[in-house]
Image (cartoon, rainbow, N blue to C red; front, side):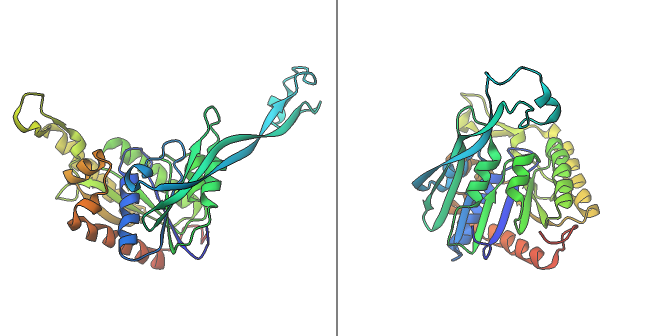
Length: 304
């Protein structure tokens, strides 16, 4: 991946906040407006970008990593390796051997260059696969990386060295708690970052459509019904999220409306911006907000 390209990672402390939906739509709209875009799905344990972008895969490259192998004839079961290091043995009974840990698939989705990493069964080693995905050579001026949810080493490996990180959250208690951890991680790493509040209500506080359910079979229209008892709690979390970002001096880049069309498009594996033209300006504004913050925001620990 060339360093001349702007690298933007979309991440979330909590899963199912709409991170991949926003990442793929952002890539789609940027490409639609003439940018040379590459989408790299680094969520190697749960890659979903392919559902929406529907790429044509043209190459599959195995990824190998060195793993410890214990020679049973040399090992005397002293357990010293547990005290010292997994790869250190006083009897030299531990050697490094290369094992396949997964693969990288590359291709294209229209004008968007595409790459994703996949685990090999029984080989849960994410870091080498993420590194391989990020090393894919692309001819793009904008690279969008879809990071694994959470703040584990997989997340850190994905955002390491990028130009900007978009933290996607929603106005729910679990998402708010995980957002705080993600913001702390960003500031520890010294990375530029901003927040997008997904599923926000008309008042900016949030009224998640996930609080709704389909009417029971037999009722006309299968209409969505919502539990009004959840609304005060959701609104409170929305206000807390905005206040926390203000105190930590983390910009809120955008508030994505609680629009049922996003859910309907996602359920059908469709790009919301592709089926609803009026949503395109939303992602154009988000891209503009990211660029503006990249020019003005200074990382806590300096540039990476």
